[in-house]
Image (cartoon, rainbow, N blue to C red; front, side, top):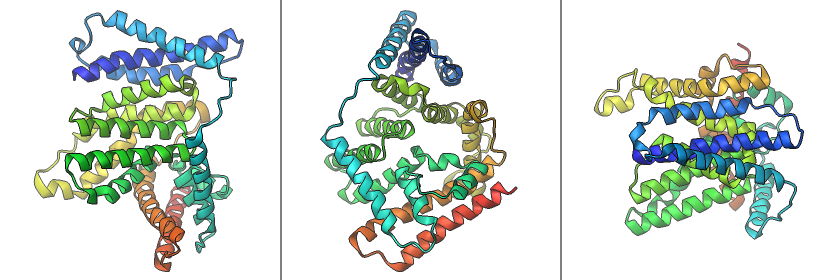
Amino acid sequence: MKDSGVIAGVGIPFAAGVAAGVFLAARLASVPVQLPFLLALILPLASIFTYRQADSLHPRRGAFAMLFLLAGVFCSINASISSGIHIPGGTLTRLAASQGERLRSLIDSISFPSRTTAPLVKALLTGDRGDLPKEVKEVFRASGASHILALSGLHLGILYLILSRLTSPLGNSPLARMARYALNICAAGFYTMMTGAAPSIVRAFLFITIGETARLTGRSRGGSGTLLSALTIQLALKPDVISSLGFQLSYLAIAGIVVIYPRLEKLYPKADGLRGKMDPMRRIWESAVLSISCQAFTAPVVWYRFHTFPKYFIITNLTALPLTSAVMVLSVATIALSGLGICPEPLLVLDDKAVQLLIRCLEIISSL
C-alpha cells in the first residue's frame, strides 16, 4: 500500500507535467493543439491517487508532487525542442528490424488455403496491416474489434505465456527462475523492438517487466503501482508519446481495469474449490466486466476522436478474444514449424479455419 501511494505521488504529477509541457511547447511554437487527452488521461489516474490513503505518501507530498510536475514539464519541452534531431539506431535496433522483416516474409510464404489468413496472421503477430484486405479491416472496425489489430498487452501477453511454457522445463529453483526471467524478458523486449515499439506494446512490455521483477524479488504486484510505474518510465523515456492515441487508449483501458474491474467482479460471488474455478457463468461474467471496465475509460476518447461507439462490444470481446488467443497460439506453432520446413498440413488447415472463424464471427456481429 505504501509503495503504491509513493509511486502515485510521483507518476500522476509527472504525467500531468508532461501533458502541460506538450501544451506549452505547442503554444510557444504557435501550433494549434487540442488537449482533451489531458483530462482523459490524468483524471482517471487521479482517481487511483485519491483512493489511496493520505498517510501512505511522504508528509511533504505537496512539494514532492510539485517537483515531479516540474520534471514532467521539463522533460516534455526538452523532447519537443530536440524532436528534429535524428539519432541513428544501434546494432540491436537494426537486427530487430531485419528479423521483423524476415518474420513478415516467412508468414507471406506460408501457403494458407484462404487468401485472408496470411495478412491477418501478419497483422496479429507483427502489427503490419498493409496487406490486410479493406473488407476485413471494415469488419473489424464495424464490429468494434479494431483494438485486436493493434499490438498491445493481449498479443504480448499471449506470446509471453508461450515463452513461459517453453522455458518451464528449466525448473523452479532460484537460479532457474532467474534464467527463465532473463530469457523471457529479453525475448519480449526483442519482439517489442522487432514490431516497431508502438506505444501500446511498450506499455505491455513495461507491465510484464515490472510485474515479473516484483514476483522474482518477492514484492507485491499491485495494479495501480504497476500502472503508474510503467506510465512514469514510458513518459520519462519518450515524453511526446503522451499525445499518441494508442498510448492514451492503452493506459486508459488499464486504468479502467484497475479502478472498476475489482468492484464489478465481486458482484458475482466466487464459489470455493473446484466449483468456483470451473464455473462457466463466472468466466463469462469476468470477461464481460473486463470489457465494461475498459470501455468506461476509453469510450469518451474514442467518441471524441471518431464519433462512434461499438454497441456490441461485450459480444465482440466474449467471442473474438478467445478466438484471437487460439489463432495466435496456432499461428506461432505454424510459423515455427514452417520455418523448420516440417509444418504438418493438418496444423496449417486448423490455423486457417480458426482465422476464418474469427472473421466470420465478426462479420455476423457487424451485421447486427
